[in-house]
Image 1 (cartoon, rainbow, N blue to C red):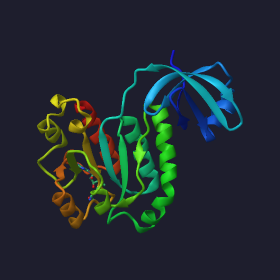
Image 2 (cartoon, rainbow, N blue to C red):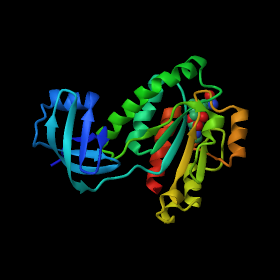
Image 3 (cartoon, rainbow, N blue to C red):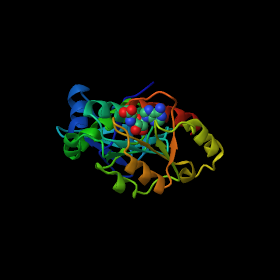
Length: 245
Ligand code: SAM
């Protein structure tokens, strides 16, 4: 039987609780009662959990048996901010496909008004990815960083394999780059298999930005001869990556 899954807002070793909208949904819409069982993700682990208390503002669970889950792929996506409806769609799909972390990048060609509004949008982006994580039955949340310029994003602790998705690259395909890194045979240590991808804005990366990537040892790769929308490039890259990881 497939049980509904929730991601705990608070937890310790033996109990977990939902608050805010999640508690409201469970208490009011699903009419939760003590004794009912759900699957609850707490601290990145999935548990069969039994409701012990329901109030107006919180639903509390006793955590039971730990269940098998699929963890996120060790993929960190640097995603330039683009029009918000397209961006949010891309965030949702990246979550479903298993990205672990997403850094919104204020690229040179990110439209000014979007760059200004991005900081206020992050909480909404976190909510969107929380919903997508639940819907796709992930056992963990995507980390969504606060938006930052590319120079700051490149200073974050990044994966050993750094791939710049570039429609200007003509030879080195993403597939060939992943094959060369022999991820399939890499030792299981998460860090050895970890990848970072960068996807640019509607107008693409500027020359300056391309140089910055080069100075930071990012390898340009292509997804083929067609120019894809940024959100399509995200889906294509994560799907290819999924086959390797
Ligand atoms: N500069 C382009 C133009 O206006 O002709 C368009 C940029 S594209 C809409 C947005 C981003 O998607 C790019 O910066 C790149 O990261 C990614 N992308 C699009 N097509 C790609 C391809 N064929 N291979 C690799 N990356 C691609």
